[in-house]
Image (cartoon, rainbow, N blue to C red; front, top):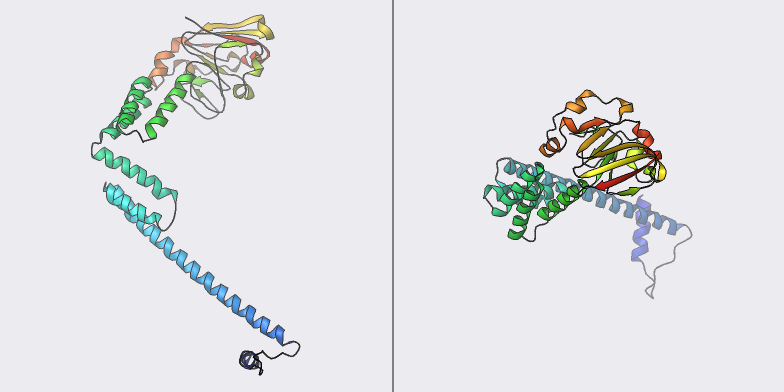
Length: 302
């Protein structure tokens, strides 16, 4: 090794009278290249080590600020919590502190009795009770107070979507009930992977309009008030009349012998209980799985 270092020193210190480096003997270039590669490897290893140390320090500072912010949040010191979450973001661009900043800002406005937040909270409460129009009114109040906020606008959009579902007939591959239970029941007029919502019209072949409910085989139908559903056994509105019912009504597939509890259940959602009390829940007169071979009419009743 000493000899190798000596050769390198000679290479970089000796010069000819014309300022040129001496020419090495064959094989010496390989030695110099090897030493150079070793140097690069050592430098890269040091850089990686320093980078890892810096990352550890950043992680430590991030979690330190997060822990402190969470403590302030729990004790309702929301402004201090927001400050610490913002400092955490300087070390790591994570979603958690961003979400907590948003929650803390809402909580601070609520604590201060901010009119905008009070209007939003009232709208949320009414929305949860399916009191759609009063909820929309409260969200509009919030928008008037803070036009730049997106949340009340999004809530109004959700309400309008749900209202549009109530203007359809709800078909499900599961029995329809007051609550959704995966692979067991669908909640009336709430979207899920087993449901189709069909607007009024004439449908010459049921199989062409039922996608999700037909996939698992039709077992439940909810018809809103002022809507009439007529089902025929054959396409193009021919054959036997399988169903002719005007809502409000919920129909279960008699071929699957629905549980008695479906008929007597008290729905916890007031609008569903008021619209579909036990007396409007009934069974089909035929196997609803076969309806896909027929046709149907959905009519709005004046």
